[in-house]
Amino acid sequence: VVLWALNGFFQSMGWPACVRAMADWFPLGKRGRLFGLFATSYHAGNISALLLSGWICATMHWRNAFLIPSIPLFAVALLFYLGFRNRPAGAHSGESQTVEKRSAAPPPSAFGALFSWRLLLVGLSVSAMSVVGYGFLFWAPTYLAESRNLTAFGASKQSLFLPLAGAVSVAFSGWVTDVFFHSRRMPAIAIMSAVAALLVFLFPRLPLTHTWQVVAYLSTVGLFAYGPHGLLVGVVAMDLVPREMSGRAAGILDAFGYLGAMVTGAGTGWLAQHHGWPAVFPVWSASLLLCALLCAANALSWRKDDCAH
Image 1 (cartoon, rainbow, N blue to C red):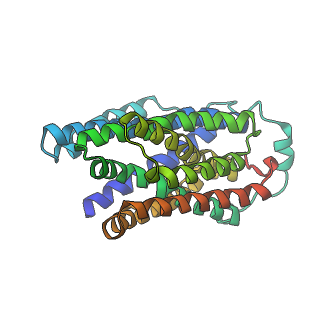
Image 2 (cartoon, one colour):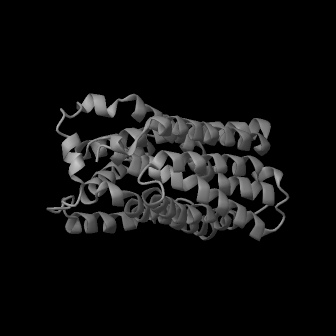
């Protein structure tokens, strides 16, 4: 348990650093599309993990599923250490002069910026979204194996279409918020979360008898569920606070996400065991609907000028 906790502790340090780096490199008007492209790496990792761990468990001892994936981490760490650059000079030289005028006022304190009611609302949205995002990540293979009598590897292969669609979603949704919503993220997140809530609620109730139907539906769920999650924990964290605080804001939002992961990790298993899988999906759907409502409330009071840049 201690080793597993340490694993989570050190892995969680990566995301805030990535968000801070993106905030330093790119201005407000480009963050959505560029961060969306960057965030596809998260889903690419999930796809690789599902395939690799499923194959390892099917052909080797299950302990190798922990040992083998750790090897690429050392290579990535070395590449990052040798190749990453600090913020380049003039990265934000093209930003509007109005930003400087607005910043003439005294900047908010670190406490005020990081513990504002708006960041709290976003954090609760992340928790609600993570119940479903991590729920599918943790439990989709188990659900498919039990409900469709699949092998572990077969269930993993079908489950990988969720993060595959999520990679497309996070890239596309970032571009949409920049181009069509003028860098206002919350309306787009609220709409996509509401659609995802309906899709998740209907999933076990539809007669999906063929593999291609299950794969197509899971992909659709991934398109609407994973894009908002990537925006909330990444781009929104950069938009909410001054650039130098973006890493801390991302860390706070990521912590809210892990709270949601804790809830779904234990709660989904308990629900499935005591009430069956049909009881799980309405709870997930309600969690997505809560996320949509919180984001809608945030959107009503959030103007583009509120972004801290």
